Image (cartoon, rainbow, N blue to C red):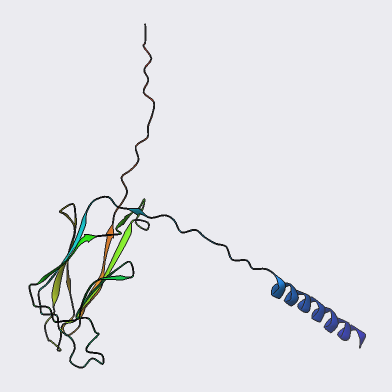
Amino acid sequence: MIRPTLAIVVSTLILGGLYTYMSARNYGTVQVDALPELVAPGVFRLELMLTFPAERDPFAFDLENEPTVLVTFRRKNIIRATDPVQAGTTLQVHPLEHVVEGNDELSGRNEFYFEILTGEDSKIARGLRFRIFRDEQVVVDQTVWSDPGEPVRGTVNLVILAAPETEHTQADLSIDRN
């Protein structure tokens, strides 16, 4: 009878001590400083060309505030149109700011999300042309298509890699007198 009681007491002391240690332990949050982002040199421009009229869904709940065209970059709406937009219209953001460069595909990644409403249900696919210019040179030219009856939505990634740093070596200025 003493052995089972002793086993229960020892187990309770061990588990109680572990519980007390875990609850009293200072977990301490480690603060990770955000890595500084380098703004890419040059002047950027975004151009969005619709091949269809952008219209609201007539069955949407909130017709006044629902955007017909929405483009988001760095959690900010850079294009937001609530009125219908005609086919063939080119929407632009010039200059496009806060484009970053990095040393690899993760740190130099710029992601754009877009959603364009196509209005009533349609049995045909809709498309748009998404272009980004850097100093008037095209760096992204992508045509995106929707499924029939669906809004045109997706993401476009722009990766800007920093120019590799050249190693500065001291020139050998010695004279060989042989």
